[in-house]
Image 1 (cartoon, helix red, strand yellow):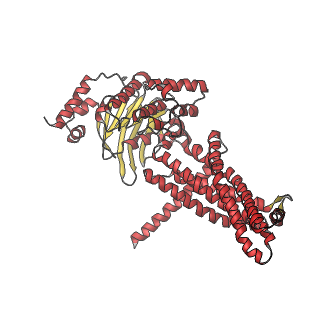
Image 2 (cartoon, one colour):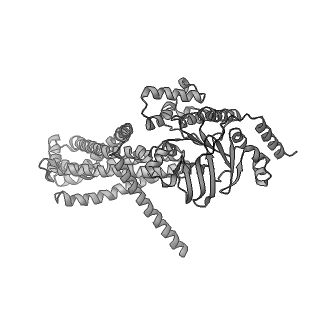
Image 3 (cartoon, helix red, strand yellow):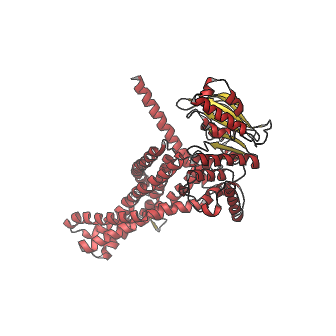
Length: 268
Length: 272
């Protein structure tokens, strides 16, 4: 048995042993990309179509530089496609004005690759930021919500609230990033490489956190990652991106069982 | 040859596009000053950083400029026995040109690089994307408070530079050249009165001296926000944005100073 076969066997065993506790996805899609093209200096996306259904966690996998994070930026309308249609919560994102897009973004939480915490603000102010911007909560209620979210991501509020992001470890920063993304209880959460650069134990903690979000908050999620093993632990469905095109759409189990040579080499 | 022409055309297009974006950023930033939400706290923080933070270098610049101006002019004026006019010369030079321009150049060196580097690092670490993901317009949150702070604080800093420059000239005039403080101050006041008054009470030199820094404040903060918000390419890009912001600010300040002076010759009369 080669090392690649051994790796695939481990993934298969992990999938079999996994208790899937995410809610059964219902048919309505909350996010839909139809035939999306995007070119910068070179073509990035070449006719990408995908959908994330209500309550499911869709994993978008692919090699580095294939346009995975770009998809998240298109959903948030931080980028505009050359052609194609993007629908989020029933709204055609391309037809929205800039203020309308800002309104739509309030219903989406985004966990950035390097957490993207505001480095001049404390942990408390970082998590309180979306609450102050998008709600009418008074200071007392904001403090209460921040503490609640920090508890949710397994961080001790009394210990970290007044710290600056630079004083936190990589894993703690990621968890604060998650707490900030869910501060306003969005119905969609987008994750951009949430486990990149973390040690295996912290990866496990972040995965557990994503599953907890699925289980308790029933959010619809898109998870962009090239960490297949970590992604399979939380994803209901996988889309594999190659050279700007989706080359696979199915469950993690179907992906592992696929006979395609590229998928096999990607998994191994 | 055709590739050279193509490269020139691309360069012109990029520059024209950049200039258009620069003015759009300025227009949007000012428009957000009159609509809600308004980030008052950020405005106060920026006023403190740009205004109070720049005070030490502006004080030193003004003081030594006034002193050297008095010293240099004394050499020529003494030859004609006209050293009592040192106050006139220092007062006119400081209030009309050196105060506004040197103050603006100093603030550009300090604040423009700081703003461009701060916004640039926010851009490359996705903090600006994060702001947008929370439904915040980064121009409203980041550019508007900085530009307003620049517009408000530069005139204040310029008045400080003028006053401390005139004071520096006084020190040299009294202790090094030997004219009386009275004669020096009379010289300064008579120069300010000489160019006439607006509405009968406000010296025109003073008005002109306050119009220029408003424009310079806008140039410094708008240019640095523009370079900061358009930073590309990681930490190297942040350094490049800071450098470009300072260089472009300095050139724009000097060029705008000439055109504003010309403009004020027309508007405020030939006395200036």
